[in-house]
Length: 247
Ligand code: SF4
Ligand code: FES
Image (cartoon, rainbow, N blue to C red):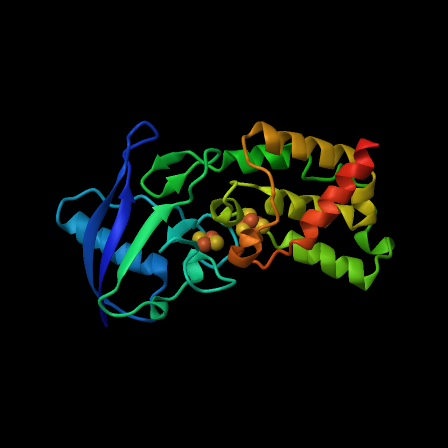
């Protein structure tokens, strides 16, 4: 069992300045997930009549991308290829001080404490992250269109992006290029996605810029911190798609 000191960002709302507040948690098992540790803290706070810490979560199995926390300065904490909900307390030591902050980006305003508004990602998706399919009952079976294993695998890899925003939070420019390029690539690699490919990339990149995300300067922090291992190759593919669509 571990005893920990937590320095947690508390912020009442978007207007509040916010500050780090220190808490002690006791009897944390190394087998707990990071969010289970946060549950223990909140239970202790509620029992003392204090306001629990607001944090985002849903699936708690690495699928939804909601559990976006900056832990000791790293998006999703010190482990690799895991989300915060999959991060285990065995990654920390008894007596350690852990800093817990929201994902920081102008395009992700804080709603409360550790919860940020990631609707900017939704609006980018709405700008083109889909294919138009006639679902009137005459939909063609997907298996009727042959796709090379190579392209299918690359598309599947891109589609594993869960929209968590760790790439933005890790980037010194707050760039959303890794996220957007994954969403562009998953369709650009498939015949079904080629029909609307030009409009898709132009509209999604425009929305990305309108939301205030920064430019990519090829630092690569996004790829390192991405819990799904989304490759920088997707950014190169998106740039090629953008150039093709522009001329
Ligand atoms: S590219 Fe990776 S870090 Fe960025 S939103 Fe997708 S899964 Fe999260
Ligand atoms: S809670 Fe869904 S990915 Fe962590």
